[in-house]
Length: 210
Image (cartoon, rainbow, N blue to C red):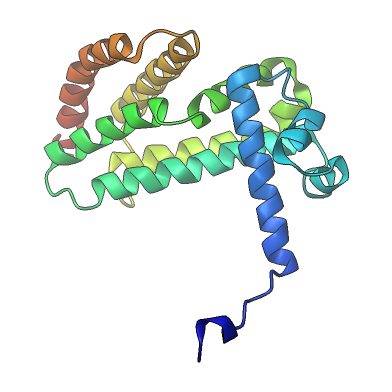
């Protein structure tokens, strides 16, 4: 059979819906990074995504639902990158190093991290956003804490939970400094100071005998 005679699969409605949703999410992420939460209106998202306002609202009736989807999208990306980085590491030292490398990469490799920071900061003054995103963030935080602890079937220790919270606060701060235009090389030096402490503490917890 010649190449020209190979039938081309027609896009289904599910394909078109998935494509529209992906365009909307990416447009929202880019606008959140460059314009901030308040300026990221559904009208601007639709225009940036190249879809009609009606098509956008068919999939996402409210702005808050778009924001919740952005959070879920980024959580899946984080989980995938951590899994790829850690899965083939055999020792606690290798796993901790891979985890810390991935944390830095997530802050600096694209617009998603600062976009999620914008969403989280906006929650305190937007009751609808708070209501829609609170359960999403709670599930994400619970999953990531358990998964990164490496303790399958065992609840993470309070020490690990406390250290991860501190680490998350530092990463959000780095994202804000990135948005302010601080050079990455300066931020990386600061991250390395934190990394030395975090590596020692994560390893101490990982190697601690139950």
